[in-house]
Amino acid sequence: MDQLMSGWLGYLSLLWVILAVLWLALLGYRAMLSSREEDTLFLTKGEITAAADQHELVGKLERLSKPIWVFGVLAGVLLLTILGIWLWRGMNGVPLR
Image (cartoon, rainbow, N blue to C red; front, side, top):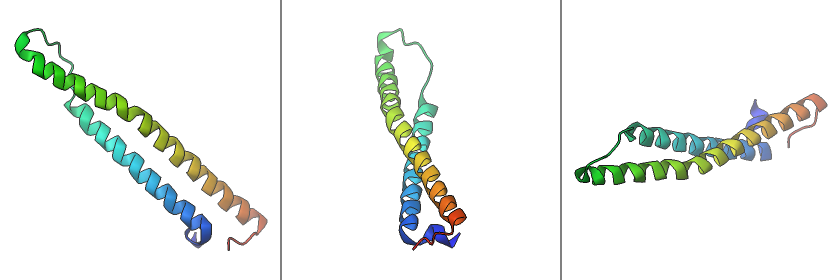
């Protein structure tokens, strides 16, 4: 386990932690926004401001989908890369330093 925290593999692990934290923060922000989203129909002129707020909220949710997807994929690929290198080096007896 110490091998994952030292050398360049340690830097990759740190990068993965940063990507994973950013991804989880974006997921939390999206969850907070979606909890404020309402499924209502606005019919009167007095409800126009509420409808505009809901449209703005839906727009924010749509803009968040691509960064969430990108950070999730990057974190997953980096994790698999780190684990693959760690296992390959462990099985071949190659020192990490």
